[in-house]
Image 1 (tube, one colour):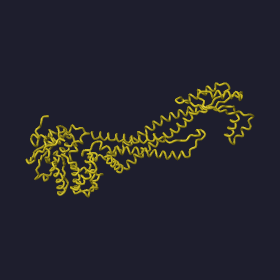
Image 2 (spheres, chains in turn orange, purple):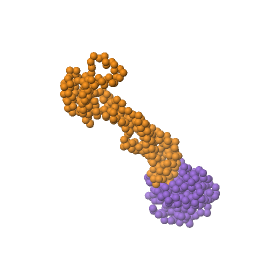
Image 3 (cartoon, helix red, strand yellow):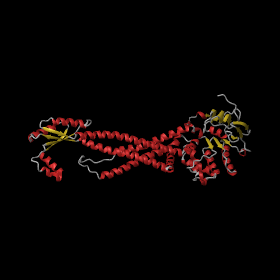
Amino acid sequence: MFLFHLRRAFEDFKDNALLHLLAASTVMLAFLLAGGFTLVYANAWRMAAGWRENVQVMVYLQDSVHRQQASAIGSALSAMPLVDRVRFVPREEALAFLRERLGSRASVLSDLPKNPLPDAFSAIIQPPAGVSAEKAVAEAALAMSRIPGVAEVEYGAAFLKTAGRFLDFSAVLGVALSALLLLAALAICANTMRLVLYNRRRELAVMELVGATESFIRAPFYIQAVLLGAISSGAALALLYGAFAGLAAGFSAGPLLPADFKPAFLPWWAVSFSILLGAATGLAGTAIALRHLARLEQS
Amino acid sequence: MEPIPASGPEGATGAIIRLFAVTKAYGKENALSGISLSILPGELVFFTGPSGAGKSTLLRLLYRAEEASSGQILVMNRNISRVPRNRLWEIRRRIGVVFQDFSLIPTRTVFDNVALPLFAAGRDREFIRKKVSVLLRNAGLEKRAKSYPQSLSGGEQQRVAVARAICTDPDIILADEPTASLDPEAAGQVMEAILSQHRKGATVLIATHDRRLYEGLDARVEHLTRGSIQETEQNPSQEARPFPDR
């Protein structure tokens, strides 16, 4: 019996090819946009998670601090609870780094009477899971600034805060956008099935009169809607993967990202969920169209 | 329920169809006015009368293509107006309908059109293939199995419609002007297909304005005029057959 329904579903695809193609394209576009947004968001979140998990804090020492005192400050920093590792950055190394970054313009440094940069410590802080990274780092930075001999503590607080807010806003925007796109896909599926049912109304009436049950009449429409939704969302993900693979091949981490950061595609469960969501969208669209048809018949 | 004097065999216990004061109105116009009648299993009944007499409406009420405005209709011991819409198939599967306009599905082949009630009844493919092949052969349409209805003549289309109506060996066959717009030869073939089912025991109800269809047949003829039964010609050779309560 399932094969009979499947055959009828495919015959419907053939008979209403243009209609189904338009519906499939729209559903595919909706899933492509929602999937694309999710992919970008997921990678941005991973990036931000990298930043939040290993926040680098620069602890600048006062000019009057000797190397021996600096060593004691380093020990104090290492002993702090959230600090993962500490590295001493002598002023000479800092100047050499600056010279390297300035490149051809490094000659301006030659005119300086003495090295203006202070000795410093680079401390990596690992905020514990479940705690706001911004808050944990701010508290650690405050504690570091209170150590005698420390002149200033820098860690890009504003950047962390902005990145956090941006991600939170993006998540809300993404959910809202995806919901809207899903609704649009649902409406398209419902309208397509409504048109298919309208084209088939005479056939449906005859089937009813010869004793077909409701489930027998409806089954092919549910099958074609599930196929339409699943294939469209699957095709959207395939296109997305193609675009992602192309872009990821030429990706370089750059100075702002952790060196080991690599963009990742959506996990398998998200892919499966998207395809199921596509199928569910088709199913729901058909249910709406059939309910509409039943209401018309009863009125 | 108080029995209402009905046209047809008196005290028709075991009737396969009973109508009690059935009225069907469209707006203020009555298509049928207080029709009461009983039809026994195996009977051959013709409903005749001029256009607008209510013949087609009466048949349509029997398989609930339309609802009666008042009165009650019992089909195979079930009050058809009280059968839930999603259970109507239980009755419709036991009724074969030959529509005046054939009502074939244009996007399905002749084979698929005939096979539709069998698929709907959940019969297996092999059974359907054999059964439909026999029906098409009997109807002289075996070479048109893969054709589409629009490529057939009117007579051929009506023969397909008859094959579809009888493919489940229904208890009741309703035929609405089955020979209208057919030439005499095609009309004869269609009638023969329907009557062969009657000879096998099916109850057959035919709406027609063509008296040639029932002349010389052992049949009951109900003459309708403006929605009422005006006259009944009852052939006494009609015998009641027990109606199996399936």
